[in-house]
Image (cartoon, rainbow, N blue to C red):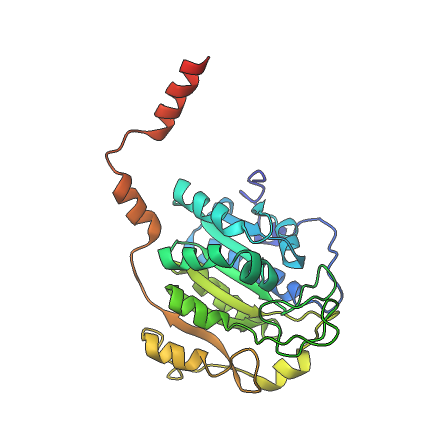
Length: 294
């Protein structure tokens, strides 16, 4: 983990001096700046010290965000940022752990970690930069690419249908599920703040434009809409499921944006601490073993 660079810095200093290498028009710019604004506002409004925010990245264009925001950061290997995140949260309950991952990164290599973090209700936030293509490696299909997608590795089109990640997360046990879009930046910022403040496993799938390899701007502009009060009962599983199934990441249909599901349940870290209460201090045991081996 990088040193606590953000401690005592003003909100305006949250953008690092690292050279940005995203393509012009990339939706990651919107995610970067709305995450910056969300962190700054939460620090000011909720009194959360900037050094308590930790960003984790996987492998992909999305992962560069760890370099571009001036807060504590950690790079995981492909699909494996969530195990590091859950470990950090277990070790320090004061941290606000935010995983920035990609659709190829987390829905393919890292899917097992994503499902189990949701199942356990680990108190972390997962933001998926879902551009529905492997952008860093120049255009291969991912688990959310639509049927027939023609990419660098599948010029004839793919013969499989995409997963619906929101439905998967609901079934897995996630306690907060939302979807945003990088062309609706204020709405996206509010979704980030809500997810970070939620106590439990928070999941936000962001429809993120890849301007170079799979530009869906016109399609999303035409089909997305922000849910209004009453469109879904966020505390009811069945209501959330019906709304989530309105669009399956494949067929032509309206695409709802907003929070689909949000409930309170005991978090994994509290249950883990209760199970380990009264056991010998592991650090002391490790020190004893080291001393004996000298």
